[in-house]
Amino acid sequence: MRIENSFIPVRGVGETTERRLWEAGITHWEEFDGSVSAVGPTTADRIQEFVDVATDHLRRQDARFFDDSFPSGERWRLYENFRDDALFFDIETTGLDSARHDVTTVSVHRGGDTETLIRSDDLDARRLRDRFADAPLIVSFNGARFDVPFLEDAFDLEVTAPHLDLMYPCRRLDLTGGLKAIEEEVGIGRDRPDLAGEDAVRLWREYERGDEAALDTLVSYNREDTENLRTLADVVTDRLHEACCPPNATF
Image (cartoon, rainbow, N blue to C red; front, side):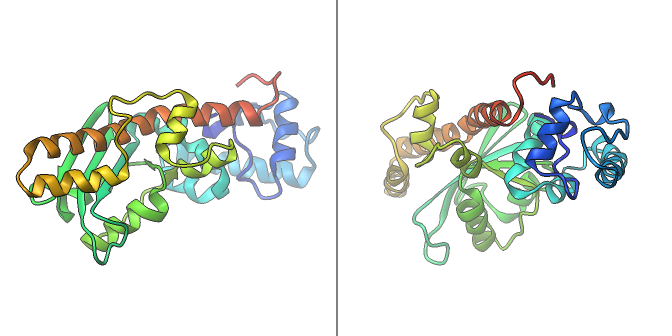
């Protein structure tokens, strides 16, 4: 599903009306010719107005416009357009309270490359701002409730990029539980399936006591979390596309 297949941002167009357009063979903005056969004249005018405006924003790769335009539950549709330049990220911390605990590692995956910033080395506010600054779309799992607020509190920064938190589209597919449980359910493998969130805290404490190998393991764990987000995003958005689209529609 691409942005230009979507009519749901238009006022008065819900899932039923959008599906009716698709079933009528109008599966792309370019295929809408102002016809009122599938919708009434007022809705047709609104669709045409949206397409005219949105086409220019899409040409400029303005992800923020579409983040604002789409209903929150449908923002997964931005992924296909911006996936190649999206920033996938995950953090590890010493606990759950940003007022009392620290961020230990932050991994970001973008353009096929993964980088890990480490506390007391290269993890600081300036580098984090640089990593997030020009990302058209950021992707996380439970990042809206945990990772982003934690980073903002710990480093006095503001993360404003359009954000696809995969926890919510996963729930639409009845994929519940933590990231690793969902990965297992959809067939995403791990090099170290024995490690979990509590191990990240333990590994950092062991590193603080001088165990360099513990840091290597922590970084590897954090990087795998981050890189697997891309695979999960591919799986989830494909499944949501299949679930919402008529079987005879051609996109």
